[in-house]
Length: 210
Image (tube, rainbow, N blue to C red):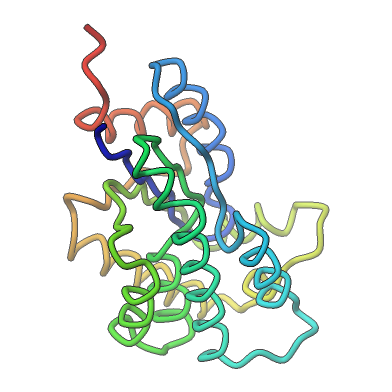
């Protein structure tokens, strides 16, 4: 049996990752692909408990602790869900993965991309994304979308403009280092246009319809 594909969606808060994920699930299943959506941090019970800790704006969490918590949740998700699914030939679609830590903690928190990459490579082992869809949007517009939601803002969503500017810059650095894997999509487009652009960036991974 062929190994499944690991597809990740990245971008700052408010870029439209959740909307794109929903559209991709429908589109991929319509093409006969067995695909499972998962979220980060979370996706399995242990990782969901870590999620509660790391996003709680009322808890004091240092930058290094935050990075380690994300990596720990990721390690459990890989062990318990991602690797077994890929091994049986299922595609996995992730709303965030390792690049989020590299951008948010490495760039936004200024811990350094290489330092954060080291702990996350230990966490994910062989679960490297086959393709990453990077939704790009002006940080101010993304924040406006996030703040319009009715739920309480989490720890990262409450950060200031300079934090998101560093995060965006880190995402761009990652994309320039690995343009074959990380494909940029303009998130300011209408959701249907974003979906079609995403499918175009996945075309070489999709099975032959014939």
